[in-house]
Length: 131
Image (cartoon, rainbow, N blue to C red; front, side, top):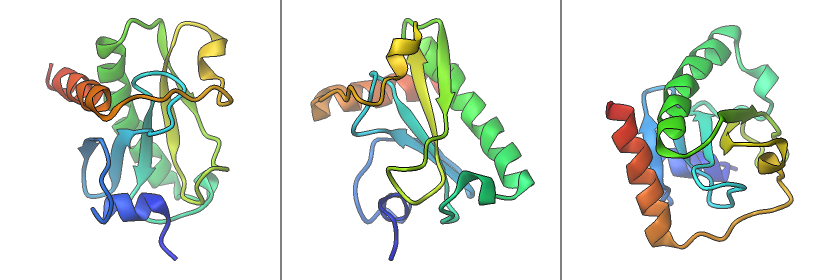
């Protein structure tokens, strides 16, 4: 059974895609803890992050770095927090979250953001990928 992330990768369901290449995809979390909360996901379906190969983890980190720099440009934040949780979806992924304090990474406080704002956020980050 394909995960929801595999369905996004295969374009079976819509997502707010920021960037992708042949190995990875980055898209906005639809249950974000902060505006700009982005998921970086390998296209190969692997449940546990640490079951990815060393080269996949390295390449995914470099891919995520580019996305994180764009998120930092797009939002007024001190840093972009990085988190691997992996309990929500059985498909390895990394959370990139704009933060100003540790409280900003509280996964118990999910935001409800309307589709228009999600598209604005997506476009802001994409624009900042170009600069």
